Image 1: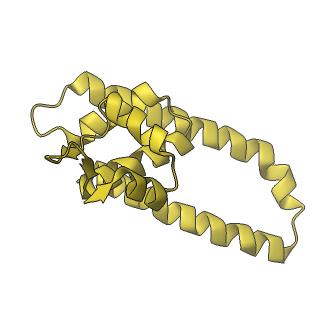
Image 2: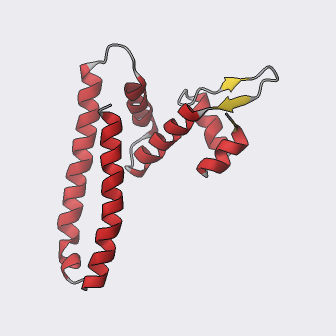
Image 3: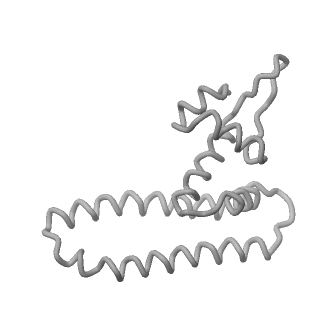
Length: 137
């Protein structure tokens, strides 16, 4: 269990941001008898998801909806699932457009530059695969 300052330092975000996430219901810390908030491993996982979705430029309200969908143990609303996958499809379409725009630039790179980019993309590909596994657990 982590106090707010510890989790802020661990995740490299401000205490104010953690407070905000708590206020809007993204994080649900445990309260001690002294009224301290303690954040567990689930909160770290949620912060990882938030960071991931923010990197995809997803609005916070949609992030909250996606996390609620992931955490849901009961009946899943098909409309929410479809909306989530529409968001993913939109992001993939945007990435495809970006690749088309950057293709002429990539063709001008030397082999060392190409190798460096391939290594970076390989790491990002692993991250994407891990995210997909989380979504389909």
